[in-house]
Image (tube, rainbow, N blue to C red):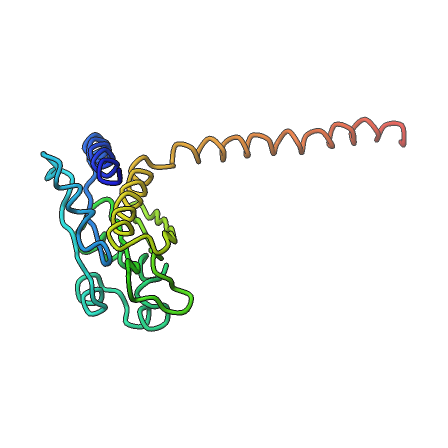
Length: 199
């Protein structure tokens, strides 16, 4: 099921990015290039997909994506901070419009206190400055299942970023500014009516 979901999402994402003229790079640790593989499995993906970074080791995360050693030391490879740094690094190194990063513990080993098997951190970054982080705890469902679900989650996050929220934010700001003058006018009118009787 996850495979068919990934293929359908890949097609939709590529179509959307093609329409909006957006390019993508991936930065993967626990998925080992499966997100890039899902996208490039679709014919014609080369006009959207620029490159994929498989940064399995901490050394690779530093060398290829510019993740700071202090980030890895203080927060660990599987963390919000590292995932975000990976996404931003991929965005900057590739010069693309969108980037996704995945780092997690697929199992069966690798768990540490507070970081169980099935914990995966995702981050997506856009050229316009938007960054979204998401944490998933898939549980000990098996290595292949964790990786397959991670691919689907990463593709969904890229879709959300590719759609863009700007059109929804602007009307709210405009509505808020229109309401403010109406609130301040009403007290002035009442004050003006009360002044003549006192005089």
